Length: 262
Image (cartoon, rainbow, N blue to C red; front, side, top):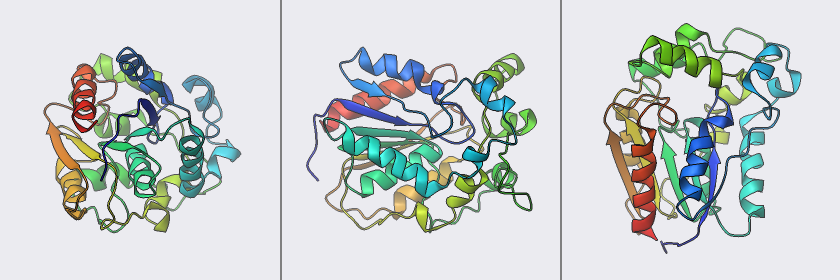
């Protein structure tokens, strides 16, 4: 499909972490001439410590669904002055794919993205990372905060313990179980055969939550048509790649790719 030189970036955050994980990315891309925004999820526009104080009784957040969340970011995209570049991480990477599939973005990047429905994850580290976060056999009326032990395995594995503790304190926040389970429903559907704006899928060699093998399977599901589609595995990156030391290398790769497809 036609490439673009649009300069507006919409960053979309994943589950269980605050939108402030994009702060350095916003600065990085604005210094390169982009207008970048990273709006929070509904009911998450506060400091992580404040959001954790509401756990597990944040009723508004607990009632949030994946459909609500996709619509939230779709509205942002539609109301921007130009069709944005959409960059999402984890669940945000799934939402980025959905919005690109709807024609709402000029280009898209999925950073360690959750797979759309129809791709059945069977990778062991994914299953180990996610069975708790779905909150099965527990009330949907309560939010769920990932324990530090689970955060260690799913997000910050292979980092020094002091960096893991800092990351958990700075970024970890409660989550809606309805949103997490929405990834198993039609709300997470994309049409893999449809032509789409340029799309880049990134994985990290150390990621337990969304391992490279799973993201490569997402890439292979897209029909190889006239659309620009690229998959890259980056070395020594875990799921916290947005804030993990060396994040600039990931941002630089994306920036270079955007220049290439402009």
